[in-house]
Length: 180
Image (tube, rainbow, N blue to C red):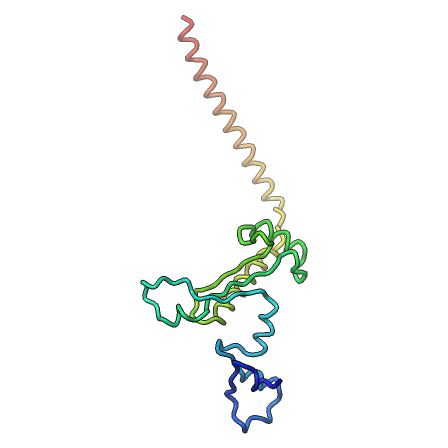
């Protein structure tokens, strides 16, 4: 089936530009949401839902924002995401557990933009930032930081012992007064 015959796609290319390659033609065909064929192929790998924005009617909104499915709800099953290294998946399950539902799906949502594609890009950016953060390996403290931590621990212990001694002396002074 040719891209011109697909439902929902229109061509902005004229008949004179029919000599272009197929890749160039695919970029000219966009659906009602402004998505090209390549965009659609990339996105179909993800489980996603598009819904109307959750803007209340009383706010200053345009009617088309409430009637067009611009909100993006993107999700993937963390355990089945073999494109992620195992340590990233484990860290994602630990640190982002509030965004993982009962089915093990990591859920991202975006509704801040006015178009579906912009919200989809926003979701992808959020996912990219989270995955980069999860992929960072924790750094070990250097020798100077370890000595500083040890000094702080000793100072805290000394402070705690001094407080205990002060409290003990205060109670002992109260007992002496009663015995007389």
